Image (cartoon, rainbow, N blue to C red; front, side):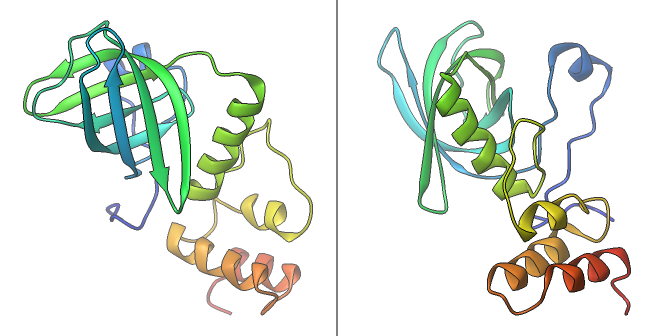
Length: 172
């Protein structure tokens, strides 16, 4: 099934991406504000993929490789800030940004936000209740189906057991 704008799937890594990236990225669009630290150049854009280690942003005039940046990501009334370095740049296409070190509390907040957007729980992120069990069933069903079922559980319209059953056999 081809990914759509509502389906969030890991991006397949080719040989060159596998060498550069240490973490998976997801086809995920969020608003982004990028500021180059050296010049103060600021622009608004969006991501085309995002993961724990970095993102790719659309821009016709990307910054040069090696540029240090601050980036603020926005989605669903939540903003996450990070520092980063441009690792890939192609005029007319955009640029890849590798995130720098984050304080532990910011890293945890970022991972939780990313997990919520992708419905994939990182190993370092734990919660209680129905959501983790539903999220662990990520291999079953489409991304949209998972999100809808998770929403039903959050709103107490179906039980955790019913959600897991739907994810295991959506044609019940």
